[in-house]
Image (cartoon, rainbow, N blue to C red; front, top):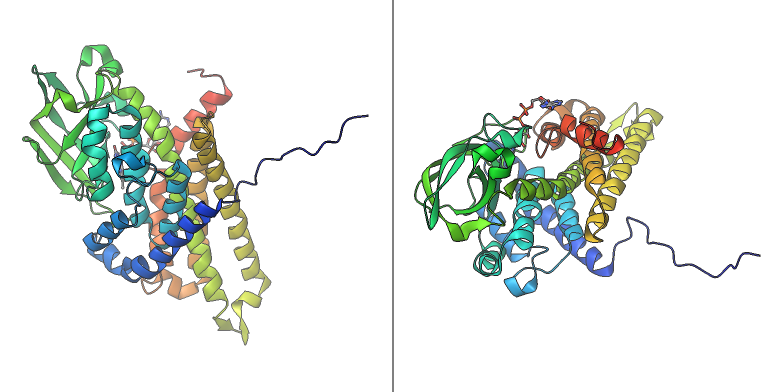
Length: 392
Ligand SMILES: Cc1cc2nc3c(=O)[nH]c(=O)nc-3n(C[C@H](O)[C@H](O)[C@H](O)COP(=O)(O)OP(=O)(O)OC[C@H]3O[C@@H](n4cnc5c(N)ncnc54)[C@H](O)[C@@H]3O)c2cc1C
């Protein structure tokens, strides 16, 4: 007979620790009380309020998994995912500011920077400095390593020339993790990561894009004209920037997945509230089975996307392989966000199509999930490579 000793089963994916619950509740309250009243105004202005960014810092949201010794909140990557989800539920623009800071920038510095660089920069990132991640260019998006920005070795410093495009947080940032090729003959093995301070000579922030969605999040061009960058600001090894870019983006994708889960949940929240107060044919529209089915379908999709996201984040925190799961969660959650936002506009009927209700904005905001940090096609490429054993 097989022994029936009680085994310890792994915790359900959505079961949070007491600390995670408290953190999630604090971010939820902050998003509802402090961000929600300004969402429409910020979307229309195409700018995020500086006072709210300062509040992100005060709440510890800008250095969530940075060790305490550098001024951070000493949390897990998973907590960044919870924060991004809760913020996106109210405003996906707020979420992406926190997302880039934590999952792309801080993450790269904690993992790849040397001790001097960590001591110098991490406390600033925790206290008051917004960061940006600059990889894309006009000619290199999906084919990111075809970048034209060049770094020339000039003894104790590099001289960088080129233009970066589409850089989130570009307008507000004080620090930029920027990729340039220091040895084009070596192809992608010349790509090097540099930490650039906004005040470095030869660096300037260019045009800000006028966008369909996440309008309050700045998306800017960066111009480097013989920008002088000390060698002490190379992050990781010269020629290993491609590895930093790939590995941080793998993690970043879970953040975008979380942004899309939060957006979809927000669309469901608004649909539930409206359906329980709008009357037609003498009844609440929530009493019609057609509307109930819409709500049920949205809830199923949100749950599935959330489970995929949480699983990818938990795998990452456990030090287990997560690259395929990260690509899958971003790919799926961005579709769910589009579908839920679209359904929400329909549940609200005519008012859903107006700017008086938040769902038309969520509908516009959802589209970016299928584009940045690797388009949906590039996620499918990653997933298929895994299935087919890296066949090119
Ligand atoms: C609002 C916003 C914020 C952004 N923030 C940042 C940021 O902070 N930092 C940063 O570095 N970048 C950022 N980006 C850039 C973003 O990552 C790129 O736009 C994205 O990777 C796609 O590149 P692309 O726009 O050049 O499109 P392209 O690469 O030109 O793609 C166009 C189309 O071709 C398809 N395609 C391309 N190659 C293939 C292929 N091999 N197989 C199948 N289909 C393919 C794509 O899927 C897409 O549908 C941002 C972009 C936007 C719009």
